[in-house]
Length: 88
Image (tube, rainbow, N blue to C red; front, side, top):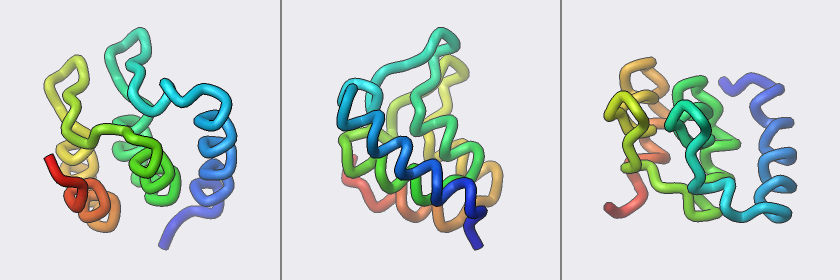
């Protein structure tokens, strides 16, 4: 099941995206999107929020890995499934 902090952080992600919609697609100084970081951590609810705001699960990070790759490698099946349901 999902960690309560993940569910709580979804509200913060939603609020941040309303103020700055570009956060859904921007990369940080290390070449990662927020979606990639949340996917690596297995945070399903924030991932779903980011996807609704246009985050791209197929975008590659600086290591050439997508959010789908990261979630899959960590064994986050629900996150991987949510990411994989987005058409390429």
